Image 1 (tube, rainbow over the protein chains, first blue to last red):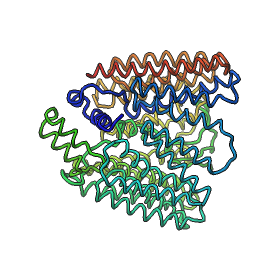
Image 2 (image 1 turned 120 degrees about the horizontal axis):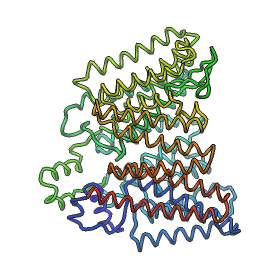
Image 3 (image 1 turned 120 degrees about the vertical axis):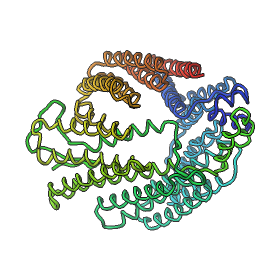
Image 4 (image 1 turned 60 degrees about the horizontal axis):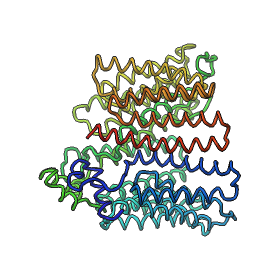
Length: 332
Length: 300
């Protein structure tokens, strides 16, 4: 898909009727994000079944290679002949195909295996222009840096910072923009997973500086990804700082929660009624915000009202109540 | 940064002058809404505070005492409700989350009181119904879909449609009781309240019905799978009737899951089973594309 087609596709997703009239019929078949995820998962199950099918037919040594070659070939046919791009199917076929082939390589446990997996994710991401695959590739590189030189956090934050800076210039392809968004948001979170406890003070400092910088850039340049990345990095830094203190867990949660709620209240009050510049007029982050909202409410309710109790229909023995409200869970 | 300015200029004759200008202003970030970020921060704050309340109740029982703890949490919950009620005419988007905090604290407090004081004795499960009713009233009073979800969550726990309480078979039976209750609720809502909660109630009913079917697989694989497939067919029919693609999409997926479980159960992981799974996946993808195209046609 060339630059013009990709840009027209982005316009189509926002203004389907007008774009169809102005640009004509879409040359490529694409889906929305949620449908893409569904197709991706279904295709992954299909690839797994293909691998298992070949193994059941005693192709033990070559099941991965055959599955991989078939998957990539089907993916290419779908892209070139059927013109599928952004359906979720071709992305799963490319990634699943490469992973299947790699699964046949002899494993030595060397850190360099991370680079092989990263290269596979990068190649699949480049071919189908999937930003998440690009982020996964970068995560493998950060993991390699962690295993090889204990520099996972530094590597992840460096990649995220580079992506954040690259987001400041204008990109022609939406997929390029999305790649940098995925990197700037996901890499700091991944970096924290690789962080070792003995480097906690350094981790706090790095995340504090990174968070402050990205938050400032986000406000100045008015970019959601930079804002979200900055906020997440600061949250990681604050959480790690809290772990350094010898304060009770409930106090830490209380302070962090109160600060977040009070901060958002202050911002929403300050910006209420504004119609230009930075505003708080309703805008969607995803097409399925309401679904997340309802699901979030259901899960939160589920966690809060819990009494660890006997099986349904059974009576509770006297004095056997256990309380695990609001995510806590313990018995007395 | 990515900008669709050139494309918007090309669409100007179709979008109209004022709409195009507004959209270009957004592309230039002259208008930049941080609504999602503020909501996310408020939601995270509420979750942390509710978590703090849970840990507080768990870790400080002996130090503070149950009466003081229960009273303290009740006062905080009441303060949240009072704050939102008092500011209703000049509410900000954060008020929804203060209300959610109040509701979560109320849930935790009622559960804590029941655990410590056994107010309802052997009828202890009724406290979940009490919470569900309180949340439902709040949801209607403040038109809050999140609080409605909390009410449904409590109602599900009350009827036993809760994986922590029930075994799979019991969960299945309770899930269908839940479906009946939700459909009655929806009918009453449409008859008397005419709120915009009908679709949320329908989604929960559909998912409980489909999950209930899958839960029966633990007892009888064939029966559970067939129930799921039949329910999925009903939900798909409903989705087409109500022109809602979501119902059709997830019902289709539940049906595919049930079908594949049925295949694996009948053929015990043999080559033919895997071949059938591949065929079912290819069929599902083609089917989902057809469904998607049909809905595009319906909405055109």
